[in-house]
Length: 274
View 1: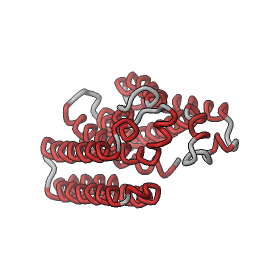
View 2: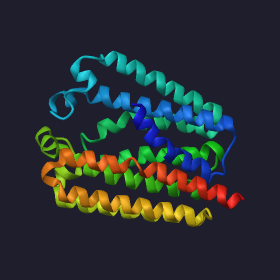
View 3: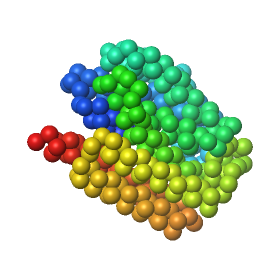
């Protein structure tokens, strides 16, 4: 899913910027690693969830339930791109190579997590957080706290979004014995937890900017992102009775967050370098 990968790229590049930039070849191999990870993750998700997807009216028209892609093809795709991820990580540095194996394990297990825990939203957030953390480690292969603040921000932002997204399947999840925060705790609690996740995400983005010496342009971008997050929550609250259409509007707004964050950080970095 190319649009999903393009959506994730700015988050990953934020980590590269926070680490000081890097060489063109590091950017190339890191981009390959991210494309491989996204493709492997989506393929694992589709093949492991094929049985569930076929029963859910919202997902029954996906490629595997529809018979347009066989499970074997999806497995082959998953393992091929997992191997490409490991190769790209090896070309970056030794630490990234070692970490690529738990990364593949996380990509494989996300789809299984919702079968036994409502914490699956935060597990997905943790997987997405690997993008900016990985970007930092690709350039500076050392566990330093500036690497983890952008990751923390992305983790809670994705978790907050995924909680809202799960509102669409609340009834189905309950009937099927699947775990999600909306299915387990209801709409009001889900919205409250989503608000809390967004607040933590915004605070982590601000903290990352402070410890990295970012300037006014970066913090203006954070202010814009905060406005989008507030607008999304208002839209969801107003559209709970028609959550399918509401999610279309939410995802339209959501697509602006990662480009604003990346452009703000890049512009700030370039401005301070003058």
